[in-house]
Length: 309
Picture 1 (tube, rainbow, N blue to C red):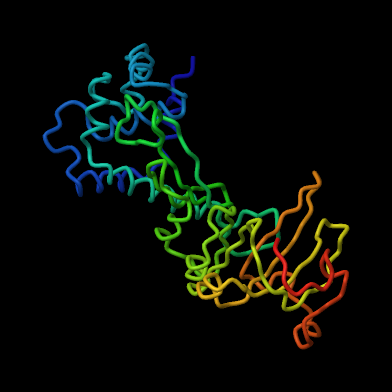
Picture 2 (picture 1 turned 135 degrees about the vertical axis):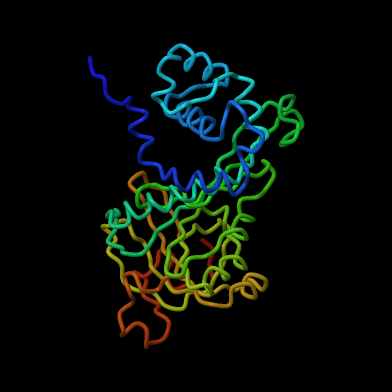
């Protein structure tokens, strides 16, 4: 019979526990704690996450079933449902927040050289949110509908390694676009978002910070075509254009030019993307020096001056 370390203990060895101890001291997490320390709390919750436990009672039953092995897992305190509930409710959340940031920094260094599906050396982030339904009677602090509660989880994901670098939990009523106000733009990075984040004033803030964004245009999007470049339609591309906004408030919020790309996927859906990056698949020098292109092949719909998406 194997007498070495348990698998969970081997996994936990990779965590920077010196950083965790500093955070516990910084926020006095173990002040006046006798039996169930912050380390015990973290190990119990990590075990629950890795083994898909569904409740505090489930965690308690699972760990107590092998109580003789708790010491070898690194857990020194007495595991109980009430102890876990009190710790989760009363301990300073900043301990786990900053510890998670330390883990993210380590993970990002490990995946920094991982190749993406496209030939791109810059950092690429995907920004999206998901709504988690809750019971209104149990979570009255998260009202969403008349008879339903919910929270919204906003996540910024580093596509190299699929590592979350930013997470914000809000009530279910917060619109997705407001999260752009909380981000600290990284110059040179790409932010990929859906059309729920289409706000030209906020996108212009990303542009001024030196970041690039890729988002989808809404159905009522209107613009003026400045010039087009030839595309290979066998790849699904329909048009690749430089445009400017024509709606007054949109143009005031984003006075710069944008790039508009229309694409048809394998299922026949037509997608319209907007980006401020003009370098990838750069326009030929000849096109950038001539008058606006009016080639019928440049865009389906011909040489129209104004159009929607």
